[in-house]
Image 1 (cartoon, one colour):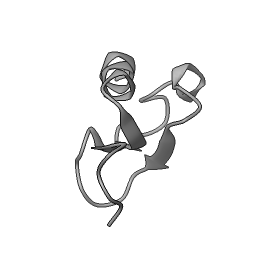
Image 2 (cartoon, one colour):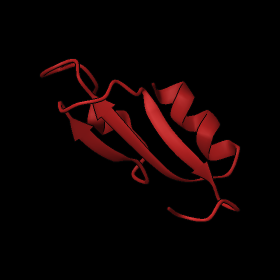
Image 3 (tube, rainbow, N blue to C red):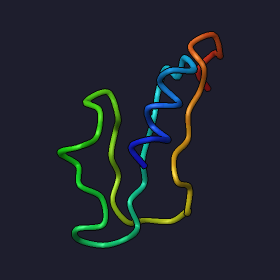
Image 4 (tube, rainbow, N blue to C red):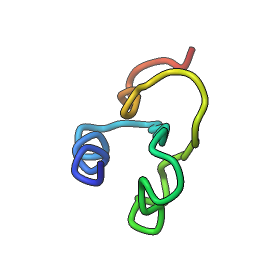
Length: 58
Protein backbone atom coordinates (compact mmCIF):
# COMPACT_ATOMS: atom_id res chain seq x y z
CA UNK A 1 0.00 0.00 0.00
CA UNK A 2 2.74 2.46 0.95
CA UNK A 3 4.56 1.88 -2.35
CA UNK A 4 1.34 2.35 -4.32
CA UNK A 5 0.58 5.63 -2.53
CA UNK A 6 4.16 6.83 -3.08
CA UNK A 7 3.83 6.01 -6.79
CA UNK A 8 0.52 7.83 -7.11
CA UNK A 9 1.94 10.93 -5.42
CA UNK A 10 5.09 10.82 -7.56
CA UNK A 11 2.90 10.64 -10.67
CA UNK A 12 1.06 13.82 -9.64
CA UNK A 13 -2.02 12.51 -7.82
CA UNK A 14 -4.07 15.33 -6.36
CA UNK A 15 -6.28 13.10 -4.19
CA UNK A 16 -5.92 9.59 -2.79
CA UNK A 17 -8.57 7.70 -0.84
CA UNK A 18 -7.57 4.37 0.67
CA UNK A 19 -10.46 2.08 1.58
CA UNK A 20 -9.27 -0.45 4.19
CA UNK A 21 -11.55 -3.47 4.26
CA UNK A 22 -9.14 -5.71 6.18
CA UNK A 23 -10.56 -4.97 9.60
CA UNK A 24 -8.65 -3.76 12.65
CA UNK A 25 -4.90 -3.78 12.10
CA UNK A 26 -5.12 -4.24 8.32
CA UNK A 27 -3.27 -1.05 7.41
CA UNK A 28 -0.94 0.83 9.73
CA UNK A 29 -2.27 4.36 9.29
CA UNK A 30 0.78 5.81 11.05
CA UNK A 31 2.82 4.87 7.97
CA UNK A 32 0.50 6.49 5.42
CA UNK A 33 1.38 9.84 3.90
CA UNK A 34 -0.60 12.60 5.67
CA UNK A 35 -2.11 13.66 2.32
CA UNK A 36 -4.00 10.35 2.08
CA UNK A 37 -7.65 10.13 3.14
CA UNK A 38 -8.54 6.87 4.86
CA UNK A 39 -11.84 5.01 4.89
CA UNK A 40 -12.52 1.77 6.75
CA UNK A 41 -15.07 -0.84 5.69
CA UNK A 42 -18.02 -0.07 3.48
CA UNK A 43 -18.88 -1.09 -0.05
CA UNK A 44 -16.43 -1.30 -2.88
CA UNK A 45 -13.10 -3.01 -2.94
CA UNK A 46 -10.73 -0.49 -4.42
CA UNK A 47 -7.15 -0.55 -3.22
CA UNK A 48 -6.98 3.18 -3.84
CA UNK A 49 -8.30 5.67 -6.32
CA UNK A 50 -6.56 8.78 -7.52
CA UNK A 51 -6.69 11.60 -10.01
CA UNK A 52 -3.83 13.48 -11.58
CA UNK A 53 -3.42 17.10 -10.61
CA UNK A 54 -4.49 18.16 -14.11
CA UNK A 55 -7.74 16.13 -14.00
CA UNK A 56 -10.86 18.13 -13.11
CA UNK A 57 -12.72 17.03 -9.99
CA UNK A 58 -16.02 15.26 -10.45
